[in-house]
Image (cartoon, rainbow, N blue to C red; front, side):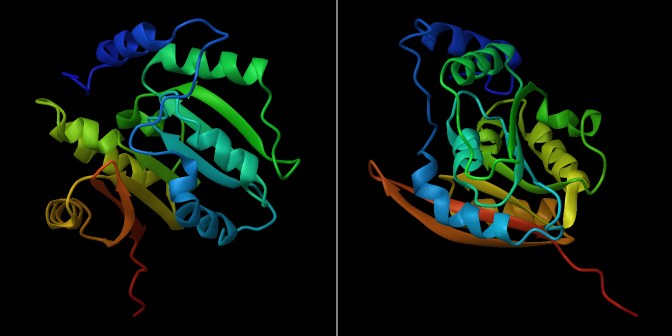
Length: 219
């Protein structure tokens, strides 16, 4: 795909691949929920406010089943928001969950799909309001677009504004750590950055980059 930072490119992609309502299947970039379950679940259990739902954003969700799977499998109460710039993708996911209801492990969990430009998270989220932001390939798409690198930095800034002090941003990517770590550390000087290998799929090695706010030094 070209121009992966453009809404029109994704509207066209999901329109061409949607098929009929009865034949629609989730489309997974890289891999599905089972491949990253062990990275996600521990972060849900470590929420800083156990009496309220863990606020999760699946950023650039497309038609992936990742967000609904977090909602389905989380033993703790979660508010999962699946957001995408493409209204076509959002409508497809809304239709799918309306026809095939997803049942959560925790009855107080909630799931929603919204149209949202990830460079404008501040239009929906106040500062320090999210516990976990999941980015499976969204930043990769921006960084590989001619006009997307500046948007990728803006997305990071928006994520850091919205994250709780104890929250985390998880980026799932096939980019080598030598390149991605350098970029993240330069773009996020006040955050801790770590990486773990997810594994290989079809000969490609994938990684999980975790970015967390660095605790303020006490005087």
